[in-house]
Image (tube, rainbow, N blue to C red; front, side):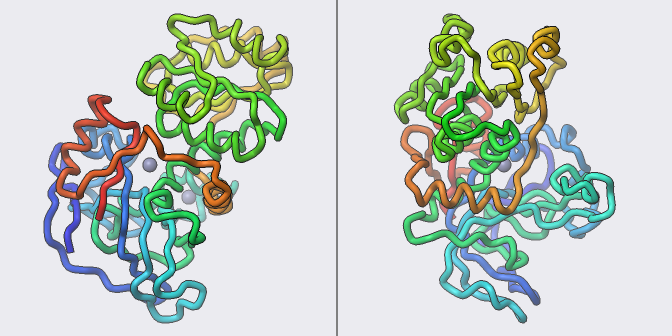
Length: 350
Ligand SMILES: [Zn+2]
Ligand SMILES: [Zn+2]
């Protein structure tokens, strides 16, 4: 089969590799689409910045280089291994890529497996991955999608779940109000999650005119934080009360500062972005309003299902921010995403 394998810094090769067969408890998927994510850019351009050394065998999965990339993917089951009863050949689904965590560290024991330093993920630290024609993994990782969700949409369940998890961490309820900073794929995921949850009063702050236009075309109320006054816009949205929740999907200090300043008393900001630089924050407002700031990373299996239900309910729309390419163009896609030219999300056809 054809697969995109990572050999080392700026060395990703689309090549012929043996087709995998499912072991006991596993399914074999004919992969349909795989999205390229920010962490794939880290692999390719800055492997030294990864939280683990990909050149050493993974302690739990045994994976070593070359590594098939791609952890945001969908497909159709073509074979099931011995003992698999819950999944049938022909079923279609989205893949939950967090394959294994150690089960022993403090993060695992506190129910935060996505914060486990030994977490093994399909497409990053596993023998299998999404940027290939076939993959094999434990049957429990497949989240079957209904007929109304196509495989292109199903490949977006993973990145949309990151935004969903961040929104869930804010604690916002139906009828509440929210601010999203950043309209990249995670900010879009937060916006769709809020819509699905019945949070209608949402303001999206995004400095890029293209990204602002893309999310505005989907119906979002947008603001350019560099040239418009965010405080005024938040006040207009909320009758002067401030928002119940804010999601930082921007990764810039000023975005967090203005999100904190936009909160209603008791509100919460959730940071779901990587920050390359430390931020300077005015924290007196945090004290005065008994507001909160928290982090979010990863997602839970039930959040995958919530996103799938939102997709089936028609709350998700790929117009204007998703682009398709063939697997042979994967290196071009990485460069396009790094340069910020083109769509926010690129799906590779497999
Ligand atoms: Zn990702
Ligand atoms: Zn652990």
